[in-house]
Image (cartoon, rainbow, N blue to C red):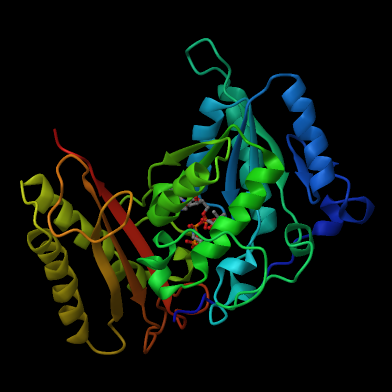
Length: 370
Ligand SMILES: Nc1ncnc2c1ncn2[C@@H]1O[C@H](COP(=O)(O)OP(=O)(O)OP(=O)(O)O)[C@@H](O)[C@H]1O
Ligand SMILES: CC(C)(CO)[C@@H](O)C(=O)[O-]
Ligand code: BAL
């Protein structure tokens, strides 16, 4: 089981942001920050009365361009955007380090202020309508989100949970057994609280997207699930809050996942349909990178473990032997970057000095063919 990287927690300067014991929102320059549900619902009702549309972007903070792209997409489709920032305890297993998940509250607010200025300046969408902007940040406490029992991360723990099976048991769920129960539960709460017209999720977390869509369908939740494309670094690495823990050596080797998936995608684009042909292309890249690294000295190498490389049906997430051309498939993978064994003098290390294992995930949608 991988652990989240350890980093000094940055204390949210809540005293400066939330007044009246944290119950009344303080008006910042361009959006309001809510810590409780009643005040957020008041604001939501006002928007309802003036027939405005609300898009919700759920996040766990430590914001990067991937998150900002979802907000931009939401701004193109809604008048008012709500961004939630909440590190949800129930999606972390007991062996994962919830307490050290990166918390960068002040930097997050700065990024959101800057983006809002851009959205308000850029204003018009060119189709006669105005782009929306961020109206509210919802940053609840644990007690607000889990008002009765303290949240449990135990597999058999008690609580009011939303479970979406068997989807939640596959792929990421096989390594993180409580993960999607936590995600589905917290998203149900967020959707009930905000009542958004549309909710925005990133394709980087593709299984999460499939599960949220299934949940919205099966529970008749009155919202539209919108998926934004994966935002990547110029070399192809998918952006992720935890990339800050990769120093230059692990960062370079970590690229193996997107390279392996690209090779498999090429096999599909070249006309291959069988699992064996498509996954062999990915495996070849991963195996040769691992062999190369194993041949290096501990002070030069970055070792990794491939958790899975999967070719699955886009709705059921069942592994497929042959791609049904009318359905396409999801090509996805997870790699655990192991701690580096020996740092070199002057080497550029990540947060936590590259001593903690980091799980990287990525995926490519293989679109249906006519
Ligand atoms: N590179 C990306 N491109 C597009 N969307 C992204 C990207 N990274 C994250 N998101 C989306 O942002 C939302 C919030 O994700 P989250 O706050 O967990 O960030 P993260 O980078 O995925 O963090 P983690 O390190 O936990 O994986 C999710 O819908 C997620 O899919
Ligand atoms: C959707 C989410 C915000 C729920 O905590 C989280 O899983 C994430 O950031 O992807
Ligand atoms: N974006 C995924 C959140 C998590 O790994 O818990």
